[in-house]
Image (cartoon, rainbow over all chains, first blue to last red; front, side, top):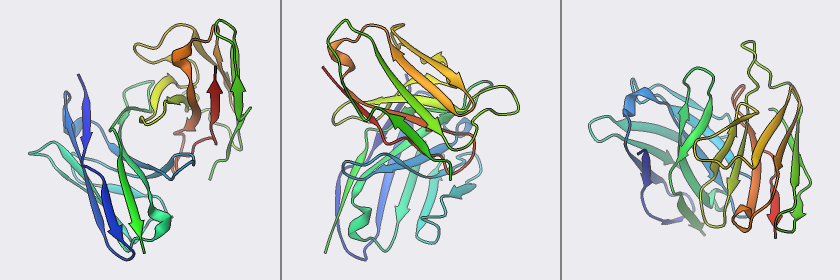
Length: 121
Length: 111
């Protein structure tokens, strides 16, 4: 069965950086793009971008360009999200989610459990 | 960006009764292949969103058949034929027709 397991909660200072990992199992890591979504307290989810685990190609939401980075380690079947120059507005739960791009699909079908990032001043 | 608007924002339902949630989008989600790139999720308290319906009307694996999705273009509906206690949470519609993907504001279902 497919599992996406994320790293634990983080508390960061204003201006710092954070890296979150998303370890996958139960499927071939390189065959499905990984997306990242965040959700601020009481808000709707917000899409951040994607990484192609097969070759490392990435696509970022314009909102985060310049201070976000997606990477992956194919030997560990793990995707990573780095977010830099944090502010209080980055306090949120961050999710990794696999996109199922098989024919007649195109949905985020499996999600990690979420990682809470709290940014304090 | 495509704007997703859900209604109602909250819903109180008696167990066994039906419920309906709508999602209206600012642009058509109908792709050239005939699929509508609209999906429904349920987020239970403290959990990640779980997929209920993909491409407008297809139930995800393991989702009870009391859930059904319909619609096309810019208007979609999620219906629960007989609500059960385990259905409480926030329901979101989401599109994947183009980036950035966006979500509706959510509909909170209470018993």
